[in-house]
Image (cartoon, helix red, strand yellow):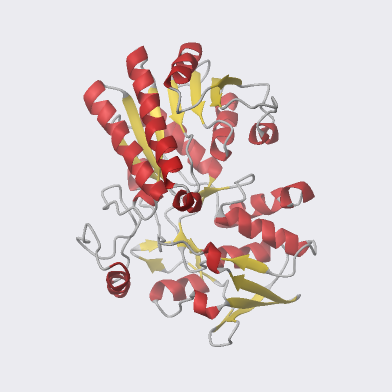
Length: 409
């Protein structure tokens, strides 16, 4: 589809991804409408200001909890495509406020689909699902036994091990109220296609980052703390679990994937979006330090029991049948040679500018977590999807964002 003069409605336009999506659609000549909640002070959304597009999009007051406001937005926009991005999207908050998360993400999605159905509009609807839907992914026999001891029951049981890279057919084992809410929306989208002919496409995007990502997300927390350290505003880093692996993409790659799905995705179908690589949280920290000007020589636990020399050395050796760029510490964590836990208390990073302390904060460890996420993107690649940005590209963009003292505060 050509986006020139097309009418596009974005829920969550004021969010991190929504603002990037709106910017790209404007570049392609679309007329962009966005639903935002009423602001008592009349202020403009920060993300739209940072993208420089406040005056170029049409903002419509509405709320996913209010189906009438959604109907009004549809009547104004008369959209050719709807991108449903609005959600309570912070996993940690979903443990603190599960009912809020379910109400906004589940009921809100139902309201949007029902408004489209009742008003008899016929847009393509792209739904922002999540890799968190896959949840507990089994990547080795040893890890499987550890998971059985920890959780006692794994359902569905794995058909084969490893379950990585994760295909769209992988079992869904959500590990947070947020993940459960996204599965609801995922299935509801497909039901509205089969039951009512709404042209829905589900994107299960793996982690996507970039400049302006909310400070509650781990990559922003890492890069913000690194820049605070760089400017002498902090004397250490504080983090939660450093052993989790994520498939980190640049937000601009994911935005291009959303547009591709609206153009070429099969209605009623599901597509992974990601980079088909994965790195640990620890690697993200170490690479961020290097991009900020430190040369990392070694990393060691505070008790001195575990020391890794040259932890950021890069390898493309295959894991799970896929060759991708990873660090030495990634390889050791994935192979089971190395593990970190709260009992290690933290780490010391040895650099050319001295030692840097990383403290483990118990409050930042989740009640239940997803150890490994890595997308199998074979399906969307058949539509023409391509990854353009590296992990270091993402880190550089985030570090540059935090050059601003206002953003670091």
